[in-house]
Structures are given as C-alpha cells and as structure tokens.
Amino acid sequence: MNDVNIDILNTKKLYRELFNNILNSMPTLFEKLRPTCQSCEKINSCKINKTNPFQKFDENCKLKLWHKNIINALENDLSKDILYKLKEIEKDKELFICNRCTICCKFATSEFDYRTLKEKAQNGDKFAKQFTSIFQPYNDFSEAKKAYPDYVKMLEENLDDIDNVYFYYCKKLNENGLCSDYENRLQICRDFPNNPLVLLPKCCGYKEWKEKHHMEALLSHATIEIIDFYIKKLKN
Image 1 (cartoon, rainbow, N blue to C red):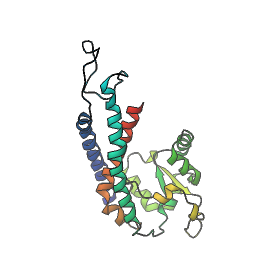
Image 2: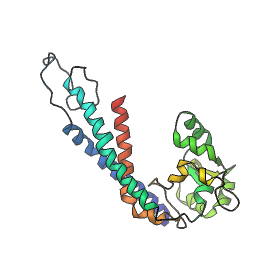
Image 3: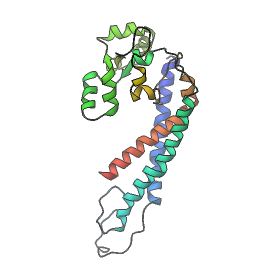
Image 4: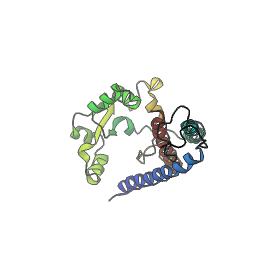
C-alpha cells in the first residue's frame, strides 16, 4: 500500500471520527435549548416525548418553540462561527499560487457517471450543473489513462472499485494548459480545492495550504453537513 492510499484511508477515517463526535454532541445542545414545558389543558393526556425535538407539536404547545430555538442556534450561532473559520482559511489561500499543473482540469474524477451528473443537475444540484457545463467524460478508460498514467495506475493498484470511478476533462483548457475563459470561470473552479477530502498531487501549488488547514477544514466540513441535515429535518 503506497503513501497516497494511506493518506486516503487516514483522511476518511479521521473525517468519520470528527463527524461522529459532532453528531453525538448535538443531543446535549438540543436539550439546553428545550423550553420549559408548562401546564396546559392537555397535561393529563399529553403523549409528547419531551426528549425528542423532531416531532410535531400543537400550535399552543410551549415546546413548539424548541424547533425555532434549535434552528436559530444552527443557522446563526454555529453557522456564523464556521463561516468565519472558512473565510480565514480562504484568506490564507491567497498566499499560495496555482502551479498550472492542470490535473484538476484534465483529470477530474467522480463517483458518478455523466448521465447521473446530468440528472442531478436537472434536479437542482448546483455543483453538478456547473460541472457538466464545462467537463466532458473521457471516451473510455484507456483514453483517461493516457492523460495521467501514473495516477490511474495508483488507483488501479489500490481501489477495488476502479470501475466505479469516472474521469472527466475540462473543454475550456487550451493547448498551452491555460483556461480559455479564465476571467469568467465557474465558482467550482474558483473554489477548488476547498473540499478537504480532495487529495492533491505534489505538483499542486495549493498542497501546502491544504495540509496546513487540514484538520480545521475537515471539522468545518463535517459540521456544515450535520447542520444542513438537522435544519432540513426540522423545517420539513
């Protein structure tokens, strides 16, 4: 097993640990936000589970405020803290320069095939919509392998499901390895590599930046996922 594959496994393991730690801490936070249950006309027949905020409460029930309290805490307090941290990380990114290795343009990978990505785009997925507007799939695996043979070889040696990895290239990259529409490049291009689960090659100018903020980026990413999940669950 090579160093790259070890990094993949360690990153996924660390992310799962951070994710579970944050998830397990949420019930304590929710309990602190629970309003006091006051006596009402249904006091003798009340069947509400006072430890579960994810249920429907009657309009006149004081516990109905529980939903609002949690949503407010998630959207304002926690989200603002995370956004502040991410802005600081992005600010530090300005100190690093792209080396124009073009691997992110010539060799984008995804767990989804092109048809699935197009369907996700049609269903409102913003990332998929942007991605499919500029990235094209390679005709076959051998064509992708010619672009970056060493990287594909590493994947073949270490991934059991290489057949479920799909390779794409940006149609706006010119012969000189430069973007032909750089000033109007999409947000996913401007943001790259903001996903802490992305592994960067040594030639990438942002590799040092990513390693510097690795832990806090993973933590922020996991927290955002959990916040988004709970907000949707409460609002639905």
